[in-house]
Image 1: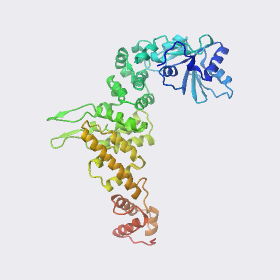
Image 2: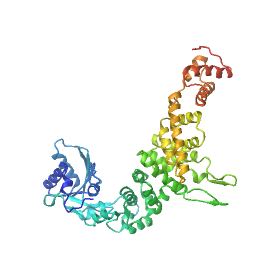
Image 3: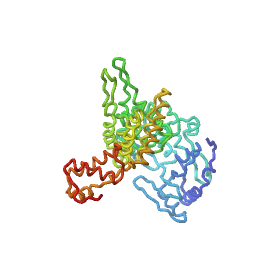
Image 4: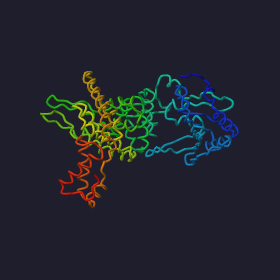
Length: 479
């Protein structure tokens, strides 16, 4: 961590000199504040987003900065919020006037009035985000740290500048942000602050699903998401946001029979998958892959605890969760649904003798996502028995090898039938009818079972036999 009272070296980029010049011409003060400052001190160098606070009009400062840049980049102005944005090279810069804020109970949108730099720092969510670098001529590069944010950075502490109970009640999204920063930075949330999150957890209900998901996504994209999700669980937030997940934290015992804790298992799976993928939606699939287990859990004396059909029900639950949290209901949701619904298929194949037929069907159903499905299933191996762990992973190696062999030979990924419905209609002089669907399905099944090769001539002869069993004869034969 870089420690200094002056950070001129952090402000070498020409844009800071331009902002300083613009502020001087407008006779106002300007400061770089927030994430850029925090990350620079932590040596997490990230200059893609920079926040600038002006003691005066942030919009006027943005317009003046654009005027001083040779190509005059476009300034986006948000008058209602008193903010403006422009892009300089590959950096997004947001300008805001220093302000004081007050809140109403039913909304996280503050009542705003002009304020001083101190007022603006008071309204910041955490001490580590209230740090500022001066861009003013008389003290350019000086650190402004009114809440000992540097000490909290050094001690890896998340703390609010003012009373945490008020801070979180005023803007409940800050509770999610506290947990996200703790997860991203591997920091600890200070005890009073953590207690205040628990006390104000119900306030999260006034936050939109989109904003909540934005923070959940950032937690999921950390190197160890379980840190964030355990904090969400500990504070009661997770039960309000994803009750389907917390429902898994219920281990029952009947006649000496218990089952594993599927909540903690799920968090292990999410952590396991992280080193192998940065795909956000595959991580969502890992998070939701067992949500069908709570509602399908049953006990019988013969088999103990069972979760029959949990994958199918889980896939249906995915859509309800995405709708409730206002998440995308497009191909991203369908991908997560597919992964959840198919999450046990490769495991069953790996446990049994790996047959060509089973592999063909797996590749046919998973299509281009088969590799991602296998990545999910390998992450799902959380047994602490090293012998079993090794056996399962070796079996998955066999499955992967078999997929390559079967795909090279049978080409069932993104399967297209060798004989089309139009050809069947032409050969047998048929109008659209159920017989066409029956013939196509029979050809597909024969290929997946390995009864015929996935090529035209074999499919054609099989079609003639199948059609004959339905009482059909070719009118316009092709072979």
